[in-house]
Image (tube, rainbow, N blue to C red; front, side, top):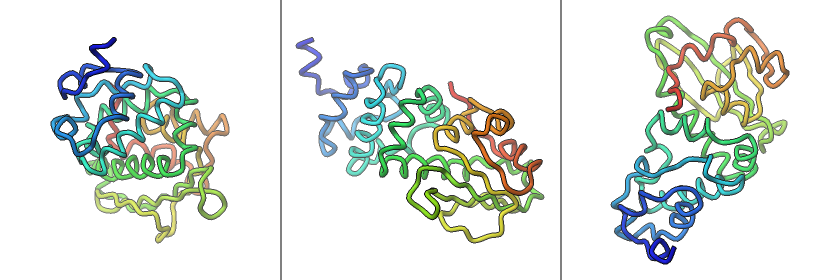
Length: 218
């Protein structure tokens, strides 16, 4: 235990997991050599090793470090690892994350940015569609965080402004949205259980995820 308490090297930090890793990241100097020698993808980031609020603390620790050490930014996490990070978190852990306003916004922004990067051009080549997303529990109009995904000619652009006329508007809680985009739940199951509400083209909404090559958790 005493040996672990004095841990400072990047190599030994990469060997930590669970609460020991969390404590080390919270103490880590973002301007120090250890921070700049690390690759976030080498860290054992597993929500299963953490308690409910510890997962929120872990993500906040990464965001703090990313302000001075860009290698810790969530955008640097490899797609499959990011999917695993979200998919392996319990609902209680996810609810703790979305209750933290700045963290909620950062995680949602990261997920929608990745959706824009994972459009399947082969399937969406001839598609013209605007989707409005309403994430419940937000601070925007009506108590929602809102995102627009506009698919056109095989590309997908993401905006926080609702510019286009939507083919479909989807209302969902953030925790269920996380489950949807990490293949832990299907639109059909969420719809029949009342966890997702759809206004507009229901058939299009049912197949919407198929236009994206969203990574499966590893």
